[in-house]
Length: 393
Image (cartoon, rainbow, N blue to C red):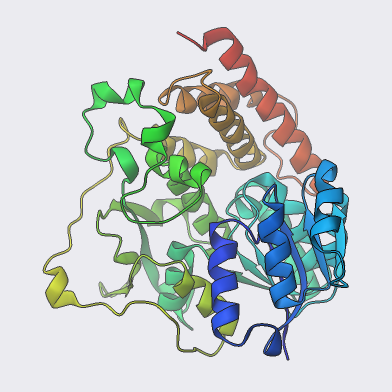
């Protein structure tokens, strides 16, 4: 029986993983070691009881008593806080899903890799903020990273055993999010509620807004570079409103292999869960005749300046990824709180990059977690400073 841990169990990715585990036998088929979640204590406890987890951890220390009460009599340990999440990541497990949103997912992911575990990576920020560090830790400890983002899972599958030197180009697709067809002059006034609705995917609020701003695709560009070692100029983005083709690999002989599938995260999660084998999954099969047509267009970097910022970050290297992500997370917090407008998020991130580029050490890739988190905090402070100066206009 394989042992499993899920970090970020109560988010959209975690819920999809839970669904797959339950459908494939639940606690009778899987040995669930650890589950972590946020403020949804009742759901975290319900999952932990159903899967008979060894430990359940909430990220919020003030909620530990609520979690303890919810698990009373189950024999499941209740813990809370970042240190508890790290300890849970140290528990041996054959397969660990990293689905915590944001830079908070980096520390437990590193702990998994340090013990040589298999890390199913849905947390984009792990590679964006610390790609060289993360890949180095994995290599030194013989750990396996399996991509769970739909785009990177698609690239992973399309590449197969292909020599990376034969790859001429990789294309990741983007739905375009909530505002792909909005007139540009309307974007300044876009509300949180409007940005929180996705036309194709069922996701959490933060990543849905990141889709609308295309910051999620910016992170995925950097993630593609870090995971596969593909030169930035070979990584393309294509707006594909139907979200059927998730990625495409073009080879030096001109042929391309595309990965197609319904917009359902259970495919990428299930592929990573059963890798290197495949299993039956509860995912809709494509009916291309019913679809009739697929459409594509080039992205407009005036509408989505995040894509330009991602390319600048890849060119800069060093700590630029950590700065981009930290500033982005702060800017998103400020948008959610009503302190800045939708279009101000990219401005705040660009200002933070401009600000921190001049600081000593920026051009050096972080070699440890403390350095990554230091740049993350500096980026947040810089973006918050921009909001204090320019917000509420």
